[in-house]
Each structure stands twice: as structure tokens, then as C-alpha cells.
Amino acid sequence: MTATAAHQQAAASAPVSTLANPADNYSQTDWNSAYGNVTTETEGWVETVEGTIPPDLQGTLYRNGPGRLERGGQWVQHPFDGDGMILAVGFRQGQAYLRNRFVRTAGWLEEEAAGRWRYRGVFGTQKPGGILANALDLRLKNIANTSVVDWGGNLLALWEAASPTALDPVTLATRGLSAMGGVLAPQEPFSAHPRLDPGHHGRSRLVNFGVKAGPRSTVRLMEFDPQGQLVYQRQDRLQGFAFLHDFALTPNWAVFLRNALEFNPLPYVLGRRGAAQCLRSRPGGRGEFWLIPRGAGAPVVLPATEGFVFHHVNAWEEGATLVVDSIHYADFPMVEPEEDFRHVVFEKLPPGQLERCTVDLIHGHVERRRLSERCCEFATVHPRRQGRRHRCVWMAVAQRQTGNGPLQAIEKLDMETGRRWTWSAAPRGFVSEPVLVPHPRNAAEDAGWILSLVWNGGRRASDVVILRAADLQLQAVLRLPLAVPHGLHGSWSRRDTTPPAP
Image 1 (cartoon, rainbow, N blue to C red):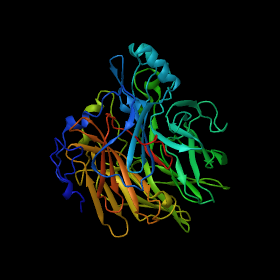
Image 2 (image 1 turned 45 degrees about the vertical axis):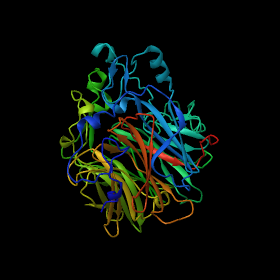
Image 3 (image 1 turned 60 degrees about the horizontal axis):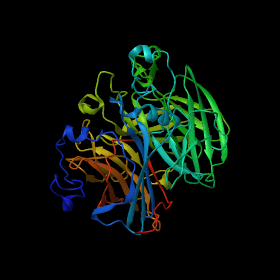
Image 4 (image 1 turned 90 degrees about the vertical axis):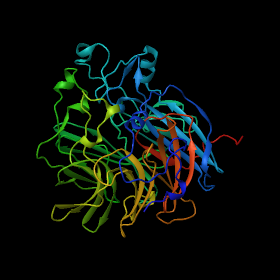
């Protein structure tokens, strides 16, 4: 079912169209138009152009993603090479306050001063000067562009190949690289996809990992209390090359799925490709589940099914069984060097689909079944259900019911009844990751709100949409005075970042 009929407006004039149409009716030009280069940093109160902000919505939506996509007339080869820009929208007493700031890493400062790229990008962006200028230059610039989390007194801008960058949670001013209280060595990898343990071991914890990949890969698991102090860690060496972006968490396990990928570094070393462009699916290969105990004991390695996973949704334990919900792809989706990311042909790429793996820890057997045919990404559950069986899932989905397409709608799926609710931004809107904000006085799993940054192709700028989590009824649309490119991850904090009301 859809929850949009009462809100339909003319697409050219609406801040976000809420037309629910099962046909493909998006414009490639509207999609491409989001890939502009952000050149401004701003702050101020935000206009609500439709509905009202729920008075109980108090806190801040943080969101990270590539903002600088061009320097000196040269565009990045892939948007994931763009420098990180943090967006913060603070909510208090029915009003909203916006800030955006670039993460001022050492590389950002150097390249801003030079007015050109001086580092190669992992996804293929080259320095000026051709192959000779890029060959043998294996330096990595920490672009801090993937995720953001408010923890231990710092706002952490994350990029998984390096240490986090600490920011002021209110002003977004860059404080500098964080060693997480001396835990991390200089430039040690710290994943861009941490998990928040809601209290399986007493207090809440930020759980994260770092990977040093090679023929044998090292995974370091780290857990921090709310003050940012390390309370648990372990390090394991496992056989095989590890490309790990995400993991799932249960009370007793950190659950990783090592995808069946091969890495040929020669084109990267010779300056012909970015490091990520040297990854390829291993023909006929199957991945592995790496199950790392959150305590004593050796890791458990079990064969997984074919396919590729960027993101997990949640996992939980049922006796000697682990249940893991993830977004599965038939193959590793990649934009080739000769392709322009602004003109991606969705039909050529495999869709992400919600699937469940049931892992028998006694017999070492894994079963996998599909839960939804609809193309989806960025699925989430209620924060208090992390590591526990969940009933409700919210995800960004394509407008079409089958096949690949741009993400234009938010869907809620009841895992017990199969019932679905959909809010759509089609035909001219494109959604991003849904962030669930729990209701402060109602503990029900679907009580609260879904927040999503939406690209508005009609006005070539971004909106923030607030939906009621239970049924995806539209609560409010905020028109931002900013054009934010398609991006990556965000999070919610109860921190008040608003100034005194005007």
C-alpha cells in the first residue's frame, strides 16, 4: 500500500513529489543533476514548506557524503572520491536549523590551497599529469566522506581506510585526526560503518573494526563506552583477502561476510586504475562468514553463498543459530574507468535485494532466502533491536517493483505479516538512507520518525523529509538552501545543535 495519495502535487512546483507510480518515470537528467560541486558552507533556520515538524522530534540529523567533486576543472572519476561534507539539521520545538561544513583534513587543505587534485582517488580519480604522474604514487588521502557518528564528545567523520576525523558536534569545525583515546596507530584503518550496541553488556557501546587486507587479512575489533573509552578489543588474522565495509552485531558475535573478490594491484601501481577498480568477483567463488566472538574463543569461518554484500541490516541469535539479514547483489557493482558516473545505466547493474542467511553454528550449514524482490539499499531497524530479532525494516527502494533503478521511495516492511507501506518521491525526487528516530515516550518498534535527505530534481536542490515511522505518512518537508550530491551514511543524535530561537 502507499501513503501518498493525499499529498500529490504538480511535480514542477512541489518541494518533493509524492506521486506513487509503479512505472519507470524518472528523468536521467533529474538524477544526474544532483552531482554538482558544493562550493558554499552555510547555516540558518530552515523553512518548512509542507506539514509541521513533530514537537517531540528533538535532536540532530547528521549526514556525511562527498561534497567536493571538482577541482581545477577536473571532475572526480567516481563520486566516492569526493571530499567529505557534513550536513547537520538540528530540531527543537518544531523548528529546524541547518549547518554544512567540509571536513578539513590535511589533504583537503593542501588541495584547496593548490586548486587542483594532488592525490589519487581509491575509485579512479587521477592527479593531473597522466600515467607518469600517477604511477608508483600509492599515497592515500583521508577524505572522511562516508559516515558520521556523535560519540565520546566528538563528531567523528569516518572513511574506512584511515583514522576518523574529529569535529565539533555543534559548529562542525574540524578538530583533527582522532586516535580514539590512543587506541589507533597513525592512519590505522577504522571502518566507516560502526554499530551501536544498545546495551547487550550493560551500557551502550560503539563497536567498530579495522581491516588490513592481504592474502591473510587482519581484523581488529574495538568497543568503546559512551565516554569514548576502549572497553574491549581483539585482533584476528584470517585466511583470504578481505573487502569489508559493514558487519552485523549480536550479543556474542561480530558477523562479517567476506565477499569472493580478487585484487590485482598492478594497474593501481602503474597508475592506470584506482585501487577499488582493481577488485573483481572471483569466477564461481563463494564468500565466507567470519564470525568473531565478542569475548574469548577462536573465530568461526563458514562458507557463504554466492553474491556480494555491502550492507547488513541486522543479526540475532536463536540458540546455536545466527540469523543475518543483508542486502545481496548477484555480483560486485562497479563503474568502469571509461564510464561516467553521472550517466549510470541502472539496467546494467545488479539490483540489491533483501535476503536472509540462517547460519547453523553446529553443522556449519548456511541457508539463504530472499525476503523482497524490490531493489533496495540502506535498510535499517529500530536502534534498540540491534542484535535482537526485529519485526520492522525501513529501506530506500526503487520506484519499480523488479529490476534495478534509482532509489526513489522509502518502504517499511513488516517481517511477520509481509505488509508494506511506501512513501515515494517519484517522479522527480531521489531518496537517500532512511534514519530512524525513536519516539522519546513510546517504546514500540515502529514508534518514531523516518528522516531522509531527498534530491529534488524539480528545483535542483535538497529537501529533508520527515515521515511517521509506523505508516510512512508525511509529517513535514524542509526545503534546504543547498544542493547536496547523492551520498552515503548518516545518524541521529539527541544533541541539541540549534541556537536560541529567532
